[in-house]
Image (cartoon, rainbow, N blue to C red):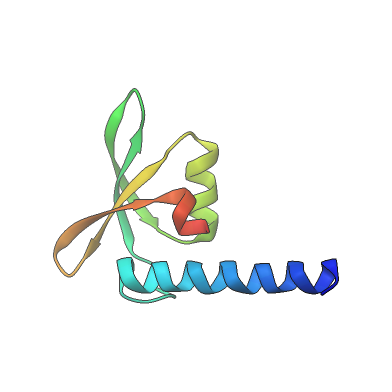
Length: 87
């Protein structure tokens, strides 16, 4: 297998892993759950209003130094690791 084919296969595998993680944790691969809190190492948990979890907001949180977010699913809070969410 040449390098282009192996990189395509690796991207497909990463996408499948990302979708499986989102399905298991969030209930759907396309779910955009509401973020209720973010975790930044030294500051701890801080409330967040008006943000839905998607790829763009996850990248913005990571750029801001956030590692975890809490989202609501079926009336309970779930902690989601942003690096694993993005794959």
